[in-house]
Image 1 (cartoon, helix red, strand yellow):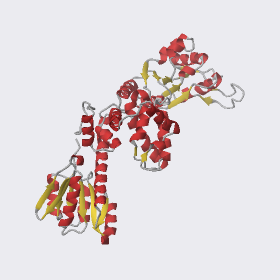
Image 2: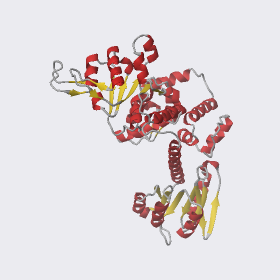
Image 3: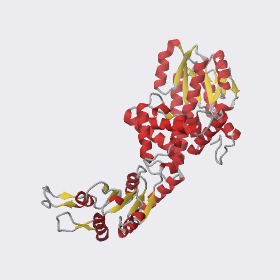
Image 4: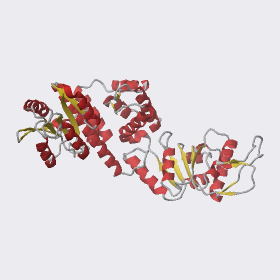
Length: 478
C-alpha cells in the first residue's frame, strides 16, 4: 500500500493540518517557512490538490513531527531562524532517501538554491512565486515518488516469481517456461526447444547453460539452416590438415571446442538427413572424427537443439530421423509466442526503452497510452525480436520523454487506423471504458496502469466501479 504525501503548516507552536481531496492519495507534505502568509497560501493551494498539509515556522517542531509521522514532500525556505534550509536539506537527504525536497528562496539567493539541488533537492522556487508553479512542482514530486515506489513494488513482485536475468516475463506462460528451464538446467540431459523465430530460443539455451554445472565451460551455438553438408560437417567436426583442397591447417570443430560445455544447434529441423546420421552417432558414441582424421576424439557435451518446425510432421514425411528426435527430445520446452503472453508487453517495452536509452544516450521515460494500445493489439509475427526492433526505432526517433504513435513504424500507425474503422463510432465513455479495460488486462497492476493512463489511483478506482471493471486483487490500496 502506498503512503501518501502530506503538507504541514505550523504557526507559533501550533501545527495546522489540512486534509482534503482524494487525488492526493494520502501523500504527506510539509512546508517550513517563517512567513505566515506563505504558509497559508501554500496550504490553501495544496490541500485542493489532495495533499495533507502541515506547516512549520522553524526546524525544531518540524523534526518533532517528522519523527512521529514522516513526510513525503517538504517545501523548505532557505532563510530560517536557527537551523537554516540547507542544513535541514542535508539532514533529510542523509536520513530519508525516498523524500523529495523543494527549496523556497528569495531572488537574492538563487545561487544557494542551485547549490541545494546539487546536494539532492528536487527543485527550487523563488519568491514571489506563482501558484501554478507550486502546483506543478508538487505534482511532479508526487509522480516521482509514486514511480519510484511502483518500481520497487514491481521488482519485489518479480523477485517472488521464477526469474532469469535478461529473460523478461511475468505472465503465467513465461513463469512456466522459467520453472522448466531451472529444473532441466540441473539435470545433464539433452533439451529440445520448440518455438517460433524471435521468441528467445538462444537466450533460453544460454540460461540453461548458465544455470547448469557446465556454466564455467564453453557455450557454442551453430545455426543449421542454409549451409551445405560439407560446410556443416567442417564447422561441427573440424578437419585435418590436407584433408581436402584448401585445408592448409588443422581446424578444431565447434563440438570439440565446446568439450565439457554446451552446444546449441538452432534450426535443427533444417539439417540434412546425412548430417543427422553423423550427429546421432556423436550423441550415441560420444566421440567425433575430424574430416580426414582417423583418431577418435572423446566428447562430453550437452546438446540443446531448437526448431520452429513441427518435427513429428517432419518425421512422418521422412525429413527428420525418428531416432535423432528421441535423442534430442529428452526434455522439450515450448516458448510462447508474444501474442500468447500479451501481459508481458508493457514489461518488455520498459526493458527495451532502458536498454536503448543506454545505447543511444537518450532519456525516454515511458510509452504513451495510445502507442502502447497499438502494440497491445498487434499480432507480432516476429515475436519479441520484432517488438525489440520497434522499440529500438521508437527510442531513436523520439523527441520527447514519451514514445508517441508517430514514433512507431508507419505500418503500425496504419494498423491503428484500420483497427479503429472496424469498431464503428463509439461514445467517449465507451472508448474510455475499452481503453481502461485493455490497460488493466495488460498490466495486471494498478500502479502501472495509473502511470500509463496518467491518472491518480482513486480516479482509476472510481472509473473501474463506474464501468464494472473490478478484478480480484485490484484496488487503490495496491
